[in-house]
Length: 417
Image (cartoon, rainbow, N blue to C red):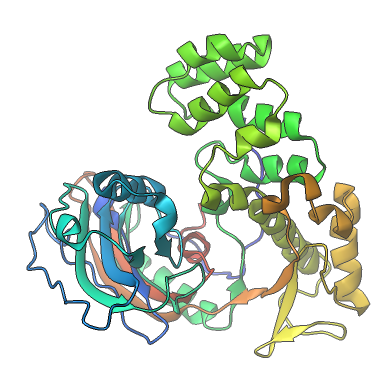
């Protein structure tokens, strides 16, 4: 089961280069930019093998509570990385703060904070897929949104064009993107290969907690392994949670944790959702808001308005915004407001429903987000032979994006697959 995520239109007219991203782990690199503009540079995984770097562990002379570290990870989900660190330290994951989620398949570097860690033990932490370094002490934990943006360096492979065509198409697309592109939420926002996070979010907003839990546990995708696909299908058909504890593979720990809860408390669907890490619980409503936001952009484009400012728009930094719906949302007026109300009406949702008293963590007051994205420092770094695909080329590009924006949105315009 793969659901549409609302990503529909292109903003540039240049022909795409095609190709494939994330074929190899080091094809996708993300470096977080802190609020003061400092880039968290990839260093440990810059080569073929992990490089052991010299560590800096400053003394806490002013007795501050939070240790700020650079976390570099290789092909690892952030929640998994945090779980490995907290297990090693023997502490709750609530002690770890971070500014934003990063892609799993790739090499990423970001800041995290650790509340009152066992300093001596932390110095001994070692992982093949994680590097922790450059400690400094702070009075505040790092929370979501405490970043300026991210720098991306991406290799697109398996391009079936000449070098001249690749260069011309990318440079033309770069020129067009300087005028802004549709600021869609990327596919990562909607979950992994199943792309169902927003559908679960809608059912939570509608208070269909049983439907939401069953969708999360049983929806399948052609890209999944047969073992988990069969386990999901079996649970959908039987609703036998006891059997599901045996059928779901051990590595699907989130699903298994929820299923174990439902074995004890068969009707406590909200309690089962609370078995997920707090950061994941938030994602369901956020994904549904993101789907509706993408839908509003599509409606503007199809109405001939596009990304330009018109009467009734609510601006942020001089750029039109669209609603990320919540129970206190301020909607636009005029034609933009009409489109926002139409998007809600088509879903059969009212703003007040985003206040979910039975499960307050998935409630949302709502906010607004710019509908146009302006990538910065667009650079074509190289066009070369793809050493892993005979007769094809690879192109390496880099760019900067502000927080909350998606690299796949930019790459989609370049590739147009």
